[in-house]
Length: 294
Image (cartoon, rainbow, N blue to C red; front, top):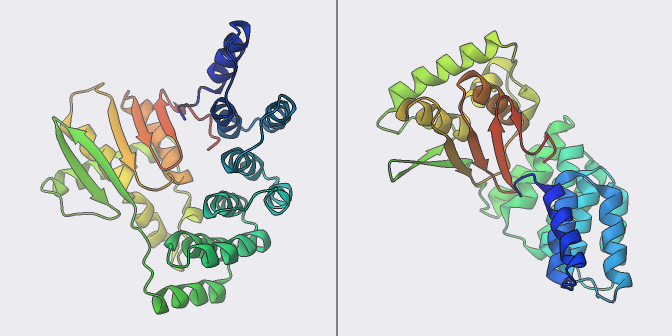
């Protein structure tokens, strides 16, 4: 989860050399490491090795494999693995597939995964939001409207993006486009400074991440006020230079924020750690521990 997949494999090798037998939980850690690092062939090899030494794969192992294959773009193989595995699938494994379809903009398999999820967890907003975003990224606004109407009829609401940062023992919470904080004016000024410095470095907002039907200027404004950017701005004005910033976010960090954070860490000479829904991102000197694969 911290981008140290090589350490996982090194420790596993040391376990084997020490005569310590791995458990099925050990293989969950290994397969998860393969997934976070995009090591598809290595993941397949470890999965087969686990089976060959006598372990019966659990739903968690299949989930890791679906996540691994899906992230890497092997969506058809991931879908077939779910359909053909000898145990009953759950909502977690279908969410992994749907999330991968969102990343790779695969409407067909994404629609299938969303339909299954809507049956398994009909009041979970995740499936509706994900398929709506997939439709939006493909420009099918009629389908987007249909999904949103369905959510309205079922009284299903999307979880808003939210980030937290702790300063001097106090936790501060920020939502998207949040101006309710007592230091809102100072935060806004810092966001403007950050924006100017990012532009000077050649950064341009990735408006493809805003899956709403609006003009480019409005899209750039929405990206400007994502919750993690507000939290970072507050952290910069509230701490001394070079102080590391640690932020928790309830959703997966978007591509635009990820690119911005790399540059912000370089411009302000800060180590910025963001724990999103999937993993830890350690931004330092203009790069991220995930190596841009998350």
